[in-house]
Image 1: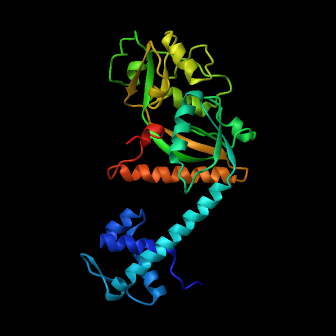
Image 2: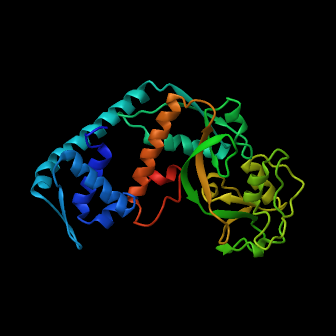
Image 3: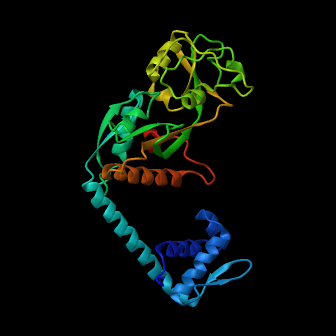
Length: 320
């Protein structure tokens, strides 16, 4: 059994020195207070010295804690630098990645990935390919794509990393009486048919994106179309054939005349993900991209007020 302190324990100690309160420090690190306290006590046992003085109201560093604090910071910084150097080395030889998404999203995704590249972590070369808006799984499962950017629910056999959540809107013809509203409810849309899906659409995906059945159990009516792309759906809506629910970002990615996008207040948000095969080993290029996305997510989360979460994932996220 090792007697050396773990980097995790050292990081927790640094958080505690900033908060000087076990409850706040535990909340900040997303673990329970008892678990946090056990980690600090284990750190003290491994170092053989008391680091903090505990009272019912606050925490103070002991003389030893104050003396060792600079060394703890240096140790954590050294591990962080080591990890960054290793990731940069892996990224420099990561190779290329074939990444798919629906057509309208490809330009924004390319801008997003390029914006995350740094000299230290240039990331992989990405070959972008259009995929079926409805069937995001087949290209990954048959090996044509390394990964896809798509929306939940993802198909079986895929693993995923969540990029962010978005509100859902209804795409309406601009002549419809509800088109000038800022928001509507599903009850108000009950009589409008949904643009039809292709036969190969997974039932759980169709149910989510058609809100079928509705909250009162009423089944949805579909048009006879088999629209496979977001662009086809919006075009059919502009021709007053039916309606479709879309993600918030698509309002900017697919601007079209003769349609309006209106928020649906009682429709569950949707989640964008990066998805890849669970059965195949993860290639270095995909591992490098995941590292870039996680770093981007941490950067975006740090900008948000406490208690809020990322609600957008596309290139517009990084414009501030």
